[in-house]
Image 1 (tube, helix red, strand yellow):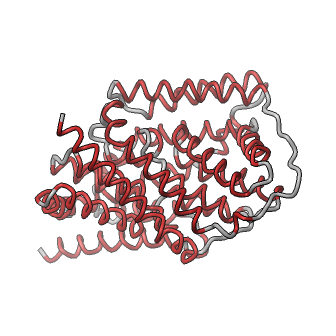
Image 2 (spheres, helix red, strand yellow; image 1 turned 60 degrees about the horizontal axis):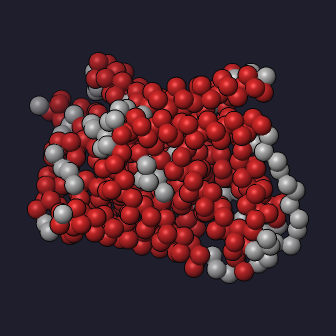
Length: 426
């Protein structure tokens, strides 16, 4: 009995320290090494059976395929100038107004997040926007924060907008029509309220005028093919979602087809694009799957299931608010991917549906706007800035997030409640 308790204590310690080191990143060592190392240590010390670890890794196959497809498509778009064209177009359409530029960047970030996932906004759009605002000689911080916050605020418009959506509902993704009914209005409120809060926070910076001419960046034929392929891919994924099919394989196959067509058209080597994919991100996600399954073996789901059951006993609005804010804050302690796995398992175990399940999904996606540590997309955004010689500290981000996240969450949960009441009245 003592040996079992010691093993459980050691398992929890390894998982907790690994996630902490992933968030802190001592000596700038990438997150994958801390999580991957922790998962290997669990197996090596026989705290997690090899068969259980293999099963946990296999559970994430749909997420891996989805991420590969989205990262590949993002690289194809970057390689053929789609993001440079978008950023140049935004500055020219701003017509000298930093406020109008801010709105255009926000709009572009919204579209990219909805159609290509929040990671694409964080990793690929951010450097393009930074290069554009530097050319325009305007304060870059408002536009960079736009890329970070819209990557989460718009990430539940569609199931494909955030890998966390696949994680939370990996036991059964709602049909597309049901998804749009449940999350359409909350998404609009999340996007609109986040924009208004940021306009207020950065109002002084946005009073400046753009005083320089920005070179027109034409979109090459290959870039147009990428955009056409993207439209087709979105259609395929929406059809798959409507048919209650997994999204990972269609996303990956569509991205491979688009890459092949564009590479043939441009007479370029597609292997070069494959090398640009962040394969370490897949290892990171796999390690998180192992750790969450390990913690679940200690009975964590029973604890979270009891908490959720208590929230479900409250009035619907109160229960959704309690669950939503608890999950939203917890994102920033353990990151939304492991939390999404735990939340998904808890919802499945508790057979939770309707308003409270929707509140949990919204919180998993939107909660990371509180701090840098909240989501993989936000961490990737920060890494993209560091590559360009910029850094946004924890407290600087928190000052914005403390206003933006709670207001957007309240609006979104209110929208979810209104839609639930409307559906019940019919």
